[in-house]
Image (tube, rainbow, N blue to C red; front, side):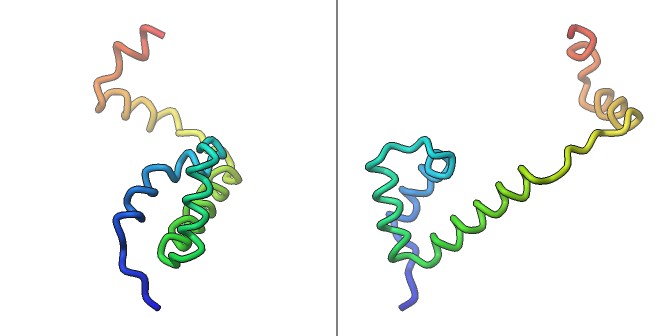
Length: 85
């Protein structure tokens, strides 16, 4: 049966970052897990978020080329902030 996006989906979505970080209260975790058992749409959202977090954490750290960094600082008017550090 196709799930119609409910208020519960929206209410729980604000708790997802803490849930995914393992910082949500036990009652919230239980509510999210019960909801996920019934809501395919939210399971897809959670799975996608988990995969995105994993890919981000596993990605090599890239450095910004110095000329690009200088241009960004100039365009964003951050010269004074960068010099103060």
